[in-house]
Image (cartoon, rainbow, N blue to C red; front, side, top):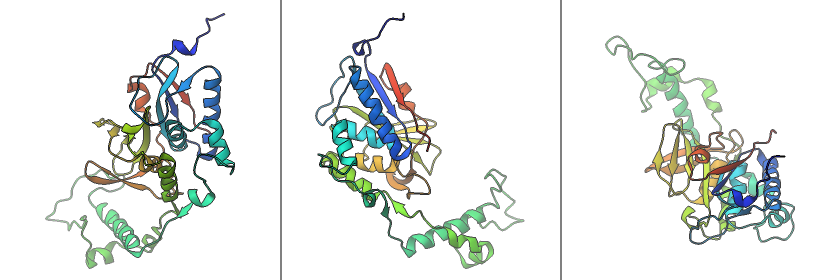
Length: 285
């Protein structure tokens, strides 16, 4: 028989939790119960950052539903408290309802006009970057290039199509969940205030990169570590499922970025100082 490993045989352990909507949160809770039944513990709560002991999981990485689970663990909530809250019973967690999750966003004419303008500008830009967006710049002497951000009546009449009026946003926003995160955190909005090391992943819509929210600031090819973002905003951005929720605007390097839910890339698990990592996998709908 192979030797049986004890929890204390593992040092500097990371747990990665991925997405899968509400079902995934209960899956991750089951994984936590299984790990605790085998003697593993979790670093949680607020206070000075500590060095995890052998058998103690001190690195949490979450995306989408996994970000919610990781946040609850990092904030110090145990499995019974989380289950009681989700079942509508009395719990230390703030109450959560369907209206908390599915908060209808306020529609505004200004945002709608801006999206129509962007659609027209995108079509005008195809003269320079046709099809996939890769192409050569035409000779400006022989062709009038209308690919510019400024909207003119001439450009609008030339490139506007009726389907541009259908650039509607998703029905819901994650503002209700962001307020719920703020309430359960009790004013502790900085990643530096957590005793554990927490990373939350989101997909940057403006660049082909994964945003890794935490305490670090590093820029890599396919992902970027981002600090200074409130925990509640990072978790809300990570759970904004495309076509269901509107993207979340986050300021990165003095620029506002739009982020949406879950990325399957997890650079932290392999590049963090953790020597062992567990992955609580994505659940199929």
